[in-house]
Length: 500
Image (tube, rainbow, N blue to C red; front, top):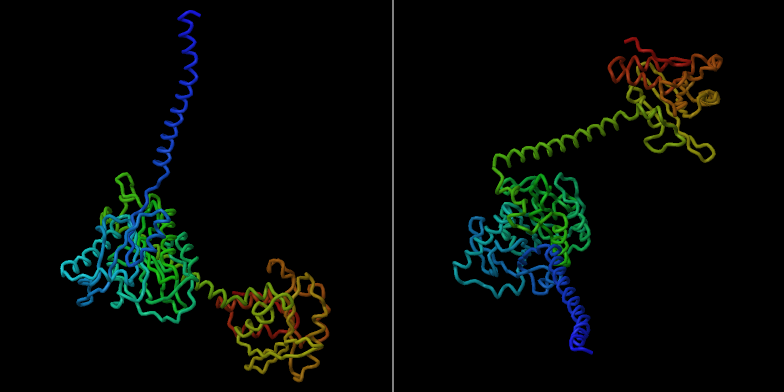
């Protein structure tokens, strides 16, 4: 083999190894870029959380959930003329502006008592930090969760978190039953659902929250979540409202649960799910544009007026719906006599019950006479008009049949003969063909002209449609009650024709 051939053979031998090496390098580089791409686009910014008055083991719960957490402590508040002036125990690892979420417990644990402050300047620094936290909650996309215990709330307000505007009231610790409250315009349903799951994990209610629909100085709206049976608020959040996003629950006030950190983690997860870019405060995040601090006060007040009017209308609508319900209940007997019988309806929906109400409305005195027949109780109505010693035994019948049976008339005759009052008259009231529109029904016993010949002066027959016409004429002041009673006392088939 020539020297040139040997060289070409060596080069062919090296080529497969070189190609393999290049493939491996290419795969490694692509994998590196892929992982960087995924990390860049999938790693949502995690909030920086400050836990105040919690323990190391509580901090670990948040760390295991993937959050950046610091521990701080605050307690032993000192007041002057109702205002916080300093704190005896205080520790904040970093300035408040470095955190996105503040999670407070009002009760200082033993671990926090090692941070007792002696220097008066340090004591006063606690007040400054509380003021900064309040401003951060009001003016940026930040959130505060507070578990209300027994300590540092002696002043019956939330000065411990910088919100002295929110007042508290000493709770009755015997409270055992809480009611779920959800009727406010600004409800965050997802947050309510999270809190509802922990309702039975309540440890203790130490303070009630004095509810206000709007905390004017804070630009926040109050949304109750749990109340006791007396209506005292046990749990609520305070929100401000952004048009493009909705209600932002920036301040969440809770009682003590069996596991406060676990509840807090669920709330933080919920906030991340429901609020876009909730923890991002970069200049590219346009949420800050609608924050109250950047909105002109004139615009904010105009929007507040709109919200206030919406709430007023909501209350107005609720009151009117209640009035409608009351009026329907008051006058419901007038239509119920057109739709019911005594066999298929119960309680206040029964035909006889509503016939009784009808006659009472017209000024009759109505008596109920009970009779047992074969173990079955029958209730007969007797009406009296004391103005002319009128008394009538009433038989009430209901049927879907277009032609009510003549046996109804025979029954009123039979009952009348058994009556102890020889001067008593009979009145048969029939709701017939009641699956049809009332004004499309025929005349009662239209094909039984001879039915009324036996005792024409003793018995009247009145359909519920005619009774309705009489009742409506009286209600509309087209007929007096005295005139209505006179019509009903007529014998034979009773028909009403308004002349007005």
